[in-house]
Length: 253
Image (cartoon, rainbow, N blue to C red):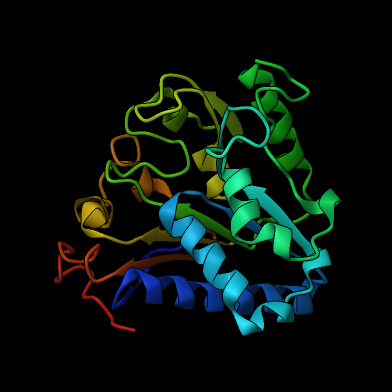
């Protein structure tokens, strides 16, 4: 576990997306050079998809050997395959359909019309087994931070955020639609080498300030998300506007 999160504050969300994409390209290329392959856990939402779109537009994207990249998801909406609200669908549109990934290395969470039917518990159990079978830890796990401090589909005080053993679980009654989801748990998130938390916009300012003030993970899930080697918060000025300067003085980039 890293002791203190690192914090980088960018001028605006567009610059944040481009800078995060550049960081991710470098991290993936370095991991592939060191171990032959790399693994990244994607996140949805406007900041996660903004990063993917910036990566797709980057002239440096071809530095990645896409066929040696393992792609995972931190959470998924339990909807039919191809539904426009699914994180997988949005990631395909933003980036994945434009790069030569090995389909066997793209680890999609099951859809509600997939092999487990309308059984999200079975789908979550299968995904947990897939994560457990991975030979190496995730290199980078991306997380968007919600205005309520949720990450992935781990919402404050919900049962999933209490999980201490399973790597993925089903979520019922999520406070934002759709109510049924699959999510990695904090144990899975904390197994990643690096965890990057993305927050941009004024609506994320209170959440970032609360999470970086180190309250409990049950009430503030983003505070419980950290990597084994590094925890990196990437924000824009709006999201950083309520950070306590005595604890985390913002660095600009």
